[in-house]
Length: 303
Image (cartoon, rainbow, N blue to C red):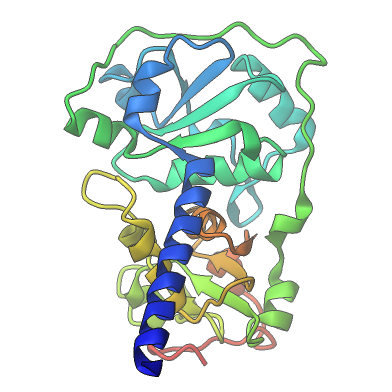
């Protein structure tokens, strides 16, 4: 009887965790059905994240092309860094975004990471509550043979004063935060790169001086989050990834990758699953060039 009770309790806990995860997903992602029903909504801003080629080949009606240069910059040796607040405000105003906009991010490329990086960027600047990611992006949209257009669309610019960003620096951490916390049980550093980079066995990224990973970091590859059509895997599957990496309820996740791009996928998933989450924006591109005071671990073991 006791064994049956414990089994029932475990099943209930799994169901509850899954339900909570799905609720978190619904706050961040939207689906194709919703997208089709709301294309003509007032205040809807659709951002096709990609390049001119992906946009002109076909996009969702009313979508505007947003390239990576619109929301990321290079700072010294660091790539995919956040824009300055005033500069980014002007860029967003140019897309017709104001503080009443409902923003939908559509990954326009075969690689889904850039759309997630835009989500992290908008989260940093206080717009996440008004932003959703279209599950599947354009790959999933076309896989379902849904209607596309080649008509270029550009919204009217938002009047000055109608968009006020509210940056939240707490979701971004630096090298010293990672160094001080990477071995703590309650803080889970997650490396979003492919396993060969995590383990330090890569052959294609020769510019790394110290191949491997941050000590204490576990590995969840950003590619494993979506299926072949860029649709999110089930909340149960994604929750398993984090639990298998040792992340417990109410603990913190710190995501990093090569340059802070693919870590945005792990960041977004962790947030959807209900974890407190931050992103190490300098990522391994910065860590690799630091002194031995910022150590490196190789192999499959985290510590």
